[in-house]
Image (tube, rainbow, N blue to C red):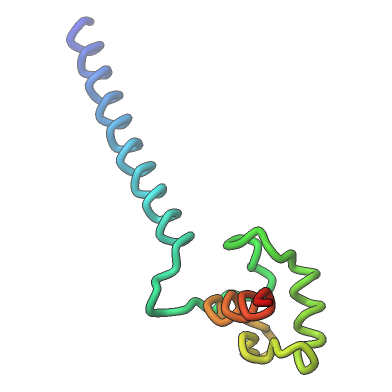
Length: 101
């Protein structure tokens, strides 16, 4: 009975160790996803923008996209088929250029 218990306990701790390693890997992946590489920009689907960034909201982005020929936002919108993508690096450059005095 005691041997079975220690065996079960050993298996339990082994599973806990595997779970811990997977959680650490998930945290690493989430951190990597949050930080874009400096030399390459991501194309993010407009509908999934808030999975990566809190600002601006999707309705705000749709408004910007609708008036992109007037507001100079043509530089960061990319249309692939019917889907609209945002070039992340270009978007933040555009936002910074709008905030300069």
